[in-house]
Image (tube, rainbow over all chains, first blue to last red; front, side, top):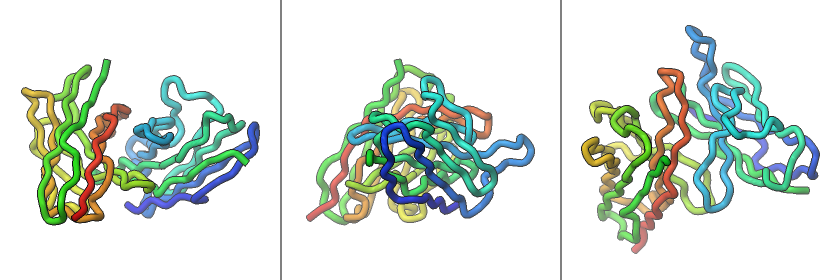
Length: 112
Length: 121
């Protein structure tokens, strides 16, 4: 499972929308339960990653609702609806469909 | 309160070995598979290895297979990563993590703060 992300870097004005794409080389949709085995992480400098969304679109506890996820199969999107200063970070997708997990290369989000 | 505390990092010459440890508290260690994830300086996250809750199953990133060994001691709530034949490209912060049990529909988000391994002559 090779994960790719686009863009590598993204500059967005405060209050504007940020969209990050993630693609898997193979489907991460498990048909028996119709769940996509994909998560989105946020990482700030000097910190470990933080899980924002699991199962492609389920927000974790405490995650602001400006973060949302969509997609199925091999193509996924993380959307930050109204960028805040505290959202400056690197965002990674992670597939956990396979026993050997794999991360995307990351997308750096900064303020325009 | 969940805590994962890594140790054992440092500077090591190419070809040498190093063992990382991760002491866990705040959850029932023996119930969960555990992971090692690394991050080279200024680079992205890279999943390294996973061990099942009872230690019977282990899987590795291809580039470390045969050089790294993941293990655990459930009586000591401790996860290990034994690294042999280290290469400069193994230089990274190594995180231990409990990411849950996706096969059971459970995702968790427990990470240590990481320990830095530098492979350099």
